[in-house]
Image (cartoon, rainbow, N blue to C red; front, side, top):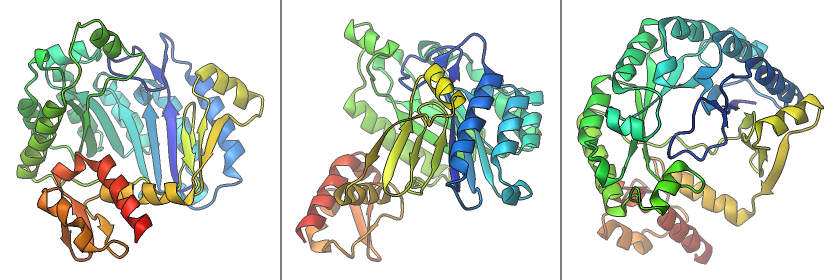
Length: 354
């Protein structure tokens, strides 16, 4: 169990764009949640091996858990070999309003050394439209509290390609994010998912759907703006084997992908009864594994090896400005990353014909 993802489903409200597996609760059932996750951990730990390298608490809103619940989880999950090491990356997703000096210190003492902060925007009007519970000023307060507690590895999440009628200044948001000097930035393009408040607004004409041209324009602007600030765009592949705990969490062992039941109460009842909470699994074919390998490689700034692909067959990509070829690798440009799905499919089809 080298890479562990822990899904904390609880939120105080659903954001307008969110279709994640969450449980909106006025009272967070922290004790019940910790018990359930540790029961599931006992079911899978015997079949796991290797020292823990990364632990990621995602959600939902993990920062809604009381500090003592986070402490119990982190200390119980880290195995004896890694318990005395400081190089295990322990990430906590947090909302800015949950980051207080006391919470930040408690998280650090529990072993949390990286925080992914859900900023999303620095425009109060936009945050209100998103149903976010914080205002823009809270983001800076949160970053300062984390650093004062000794957590310097901070990532900020931002959402781009919002409806034009919001008049959101994307360049301003990027500049304000950079001014906080985060170690990492995650940029997510807005999508309309079924059964979300955003989908209902679009269906009745209350707001417009994301525009493809706007998506591309803001994505490429981010590349230029952040590169000028010294940020390098990369993508860390998640192709490693990993274990997921909690409702709706996914696991992958190199052959099959499994996922837990999504509903919190159904998950809790299953593990309480000593049953596996796995809802279903997908065994990948050779073709699916190859497509996934190519896709994940093209997402990185390393690219994919040309050993199985004749460079002469990829000249159209280069001519269109979608890729570069050097040192035996094909790497996508920012314009190519906008077409990632199609290009990965093309490359896999080319592999099957050579």
